[in-house]
Image (cartoon, rainbow, N blue to C red; front, side):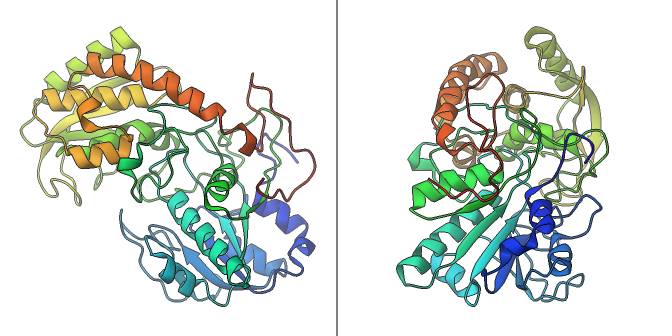
Length: 404
């Protein structure tokens, strides 16, 4: 074994497939991000190891990842594995139970990107609810997470816990700060505790203290969703996704989602100058370049937009929310209009509490950040990996770890 990544949960199961003995008929919730180090799809690798897979399931964007935001196309039969497939996106409990009929164990192999509004955790919540109901009905459904590192690391960012008034499919739990710094396995433990369900996690084999994506090229990056083509876009996403709550474009429908923002009739040069002045004052970590683009889909499709392209200024961005709120409010200053309902669903706080100038927004964020960090510490019973500077026992050599 070389490099910092070591083995994912999938690869640990492949190394010891006898662990699947007694799992019965096995389903797999996955998408293109579920691959081995050599880019073999998890379904194909598991079949090769003798695991009895009978069906594939996909989250938002589908098993093959072809769906646009908010879509989950049915692929029918997966070409690589030959298995039938369906989706588990935004279903009610009856629909989820129906689709999981005939499955005794559900494996989950998905890359999560560490943000409360990323919907893969919402689908995992739905699966855990179905598992609990099946257990109550005497038809157990075992749920096993094949864990992977959170590609943007342990960093936690406020706002703090979601206001229950703003629960939605982009905010299914009030237990998480906006950027939670958990792996999918740790998230599943949080959700299982809330739902009264059971979950098992096959841990990654990462060295103590390491968490994130292998940036040395040993493990290729596979986009977990269509608008996160690389790690830079993924680092920006927790903050720049807030632009969804404006009538400005967040860059969807371009080659640079969450790096390009703008709208028709904006002054690109003035916006870039404003953002660069704010960066000098608040050290946001990016340089803004005036840019012009025409999205092919989503907001302002086919229209010429003026705005900015964001460039990391001094190494990988570590915090995205100050930048996201700054860009959001600077676009408002330039004339963009907010969608209060979507803004409070994303942030989890009343839209009226979100100031309309960058300076005031960053001041509010300082209080949210402290509260978010405190909220994150309450999740320590669900941690499976050590955090730098925070006492937390390593789970040790045990691979399967049930929820407490």
